[in-house]
Image (cartoon, rainbow, N blue to C red):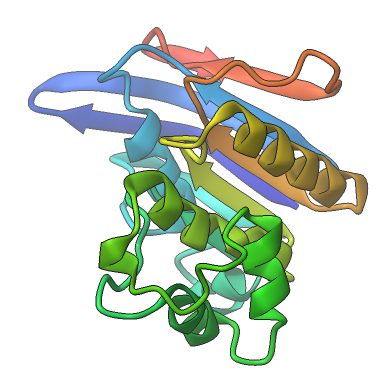
Length: 203
């Protein structure tokens, strides 16, 4: 489904990673790990096509994502470290912007925001704003989810709910690439981990 081929990234005369290669197929769940500054967010942005590597290639179904950008993005759900919501819109208005035909009320309830549908985003806490973005996990039909620190500002109960939804996605043949400082549920099997800790890395 998705392939990373010998990616190299340099920032401020420093090599963050080089020769980075791995594959992600249907049903795969990959966690990118590493210390702060190791390049985790930079890597995810390259995987989505938002940034270009200094060398190497990212492929979707055997084709470079830069050549099929629109088609690739139809199959991609990207939720970055920032919530990516409009603070002047309500919770449900934010969701309807991305999913006008979806059951946004149910998605917000699933994400723990029942009763907050019509509250403006800027009136919500950081964790609640994060939940607005993560409610898209119950609406998106994208096959590949790339998530940067999805559990930031989310309580333990919320983390369990979100993890359960992610497990459902991979069980249904989807794929996930994520970063998180939170320990994932020990009962979840099949998670592969890629550590960004050296100039050469592979999975």
